[in-house]
Amino acid sequence: MADYGAIVRRRYWWIMLPVFFCWLVVWATSWFLPPTYQSEALILVQQQKITESYVASNVTVDLQDRLQSMTQQILSRTRLQRTIDRFHLYAEHRRLAGLAPLQDPIDLMRKDIKIDLVRSPGRAELTSFKIQYSAGSPELAQQVNSELTSLFIDENLKAQQQQSETTTGFLNSELAAAKAKLEEQEAKVRFFKTSHFGDLPSQMQTNVQILSGLQTQLQTAQRDLDSAKQQKLYLASLIEQYDSQQSSLDRDGATATPPEALDRELMDLRSRLAEARLKYTDRYPDVIALQDKISKTEKLRKQVEEEISSHQKADHKPEAAGYAEATTTHATTTPSMMQVQSQLKANELEISNYQKREKEIESQISDYQARLNMTPETEQELADISRGYDESMSNYNSLLQKQMQSQLATNLEQRQQGEQFSILDPPSLPNKPSSPNHVKLSVAGLFLGLVLGIAFTVLLEKTRVRVWRADTLQGIVPARILVALPHLSTPREDQRGAVVRLLKIAVTVAMVLLIVAGHLYAMYRG
Image (cartoon, rainbow, N blue to C red):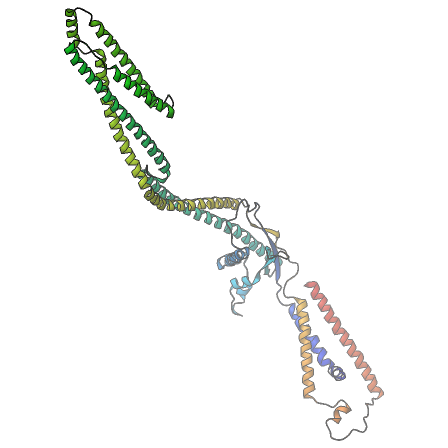
């Protein structure tokens, strides 16, 4: 350390003078550089005013990516050229085109624009961003920065509305296509159901119930047909008995009637009525029909008994009169037989109707059985057709819901209720230049001067070799040093040395004061 201290003392001016003059040159040169003023604006990112649980935004792009895209659009050549022409920027570069290579004003302006993202503390969420622009005057920097700020706000609003409207338009077109496809599928399903009406899977239970009802009707019709056939046999037997009685009347001159057959018929009908009442109520059609037949049969039996009694009275009249009356009776048919014959004709017509009804019911049963047999095949075909319809319906409902949400989001953007950019700090009017930084240049001049001073000192120490101390000489020559004599100065040399030291101190103080004053001035002026 003693050697280094001695070197500093020997080369003091070789260190101090480069430090001072280098600082002075750099400091003085910095004041001739053209100043640059930087205007700064802070833009806040406002979230949409209506919560997303009610209206979801159509803009799902990350804010940082969206901001980067907007920056590229705003910093495009076309837009920057309009701003340059409007404010007549970088005209000095055009004037210096003959002295230096001409630089593109667009590139110069892009270098002067700086965008910094501001995130919330402790979170990665982007809350705001800064726009900075540097120009040759404070007013120009503020004006251009205001223009850039307006471009960002307008571009964000325009981009969000355009993206939201584009999304809504796309969903509208997709919804129209889905609706057309749905209508096509509906037409296919409708045509299939129309062409297979009656054997659809949804009608299977109804067909089973109808088939069961038809089978019940068939059984009822068969019972009615059997009953009508029995009634026909009964009426036919009455007519045969009547004919036989008429033949006996022709031979014996008397009459006979078949009341026993009527009694048997009444007993049979009453027995059937009792069995029917065990199963059905009195309002059931079979019960009512049996009651009506019993009533008619009783009436017919009564008429037959009256005819028998009238014939018995005729047997006590004179022979001539009896003969004439019998002849008259034989010549005509009694009213009861006429009624029986009419009932027989009605019975034959009833049998024909029952047979026709039975065939119709059997045909309907065959038709419904065929429908039930076709139901599995129809169900498979309908499932194939309905699958496309269900998919189209699901797609249509999904698109309809998305279209409604997108329309709400578009209306929200059009009313400027969505995510927006708002100016939190307007573009500032700088009162100090941002560059050149005179303080930094002053410090850089000092550092450069110190480096030069040290370089000069090292160079001199290496090129001008001298022996400054006795111990240094001992390592150079082979002889031993016996005595070392110190420097003996005269009074005049001492006086001159004192003056030199005072001058050295004065010059050093002056240089230090100038450097400090220069730093203070640079800090004051910026």
